[in-house]
Image 1 (cartoon, one colour):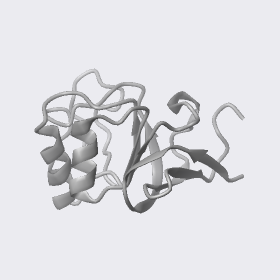
Image 2: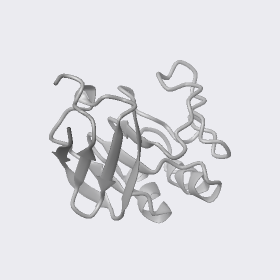
Image 3: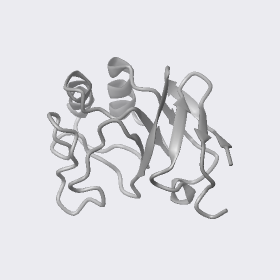
Length: 139
């Protein structure tokens, strides 16, 4: 069953991939390896997991403005997420997504906690829509 989740477009473009959901914020500076896309922050729920090619959903970013350039490095190295979904976009993540050409939305009308990781989703940064090809976790 296809479900459309509405949000606000932040970075233009469209991408499809496996949904990877984190309940914790992500710091790209020292939290994600820019060469591999693996989350390296100790104690993070996604520690040891690659974000490369995934639709990465997390509440918001944290950390230094250098995080924008880490997102750009991930793109250059072929290790970036396909798309980003945030509950609340903040400048570090939004700038990184825009300069890297990664579609991004925020303010989804469905909480991240209700989104089932592993589902195939398409993020449309132009319209702000997420097309969720599997049922939501609570359905």
